[in-house]
Image (tube, rainbow, N blue to C red; front, side, top):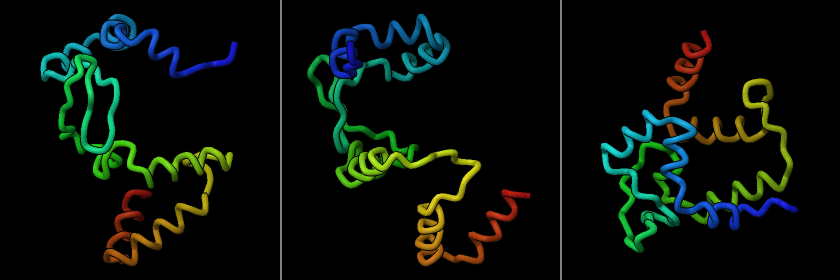
Length: 125
């Protein structure tokens, strides 16, 4: 039987928090519950999360880079799909992919490049 992500997650929809609490990390689950994040988001798009009860919440979590442009921003989503479809290698620490140089150049053009290089040397040392 082929893997069907949508069916699998739909069939286990009501077990997300309890399953994580029981089998993955009960302490983190307790912390999440304490701060009120135990609501299970079923869908998220742009700046909103939709929970099982049908309510919609403004997503104010922006500590992770992609959330700053909104969840599933069309340009970010398409870039990820394109990357996955290209079957690129992704050894992260042990390769020099073309995008790394392109992004560093673009970043350097928008910032003080000397400062960026100095910071990079310190990080490497």
